[in-house]
Image (cartoon, rainbow, N blue to C red; front, side, top):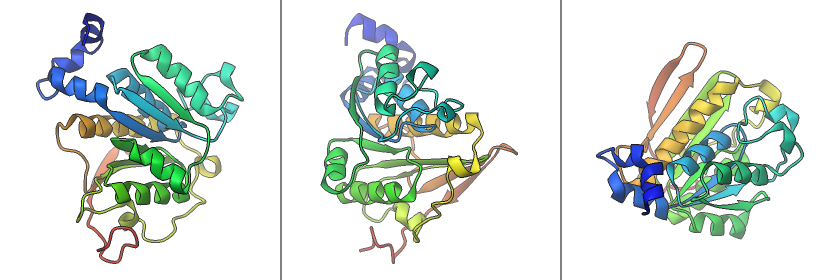
Length: 246
């Protein structure tokens, strides 16, 4: 690590739980981020700024004017640009040390599995249950930790699914097919809420790849932002889960 890197990451390196060794683990890590909207924007920016070595950004959408109220990785000048390209431009300006890869497509099947295979952790910032379920299954198959976040209206949630045998997976939390009507485009969302949840996803991913602290594995934090109240739910593996049940 050269002098410039030591200075850039000095406020993290001085943390006794992290130090230079932890910073080097961040530099060696590869994190996959699916969705570059309200959650993915702050998650990607904090992970890039913190020194994650490689970020792979996945999204099949383009920047729209209605995104700019909350999707802070994008700008007015980039309306019509693929979100992955816009976010990559922001991240490279923020930290040129981080390698940024982009996939401008919605991943399925073997392509999704290949993307998960190359990652040390996956950050799910998607906005639909089909993608969330597919990511969960792919991560569970490879025992790759999954950091899940969601936000709508004034409510948000964040959790970690470790992929370890005996631990719950995302499908244990939502055994049915989910409610696809619960989208920001149909229900609205307050801007800072996605920043709170996305930043927490970045923090959990950092702890996972650096091997420090206690993650949210087996727990779900739920935020009522109107009252600024947090609830913690303890999750258990569903013995009838179609993904992780033995």
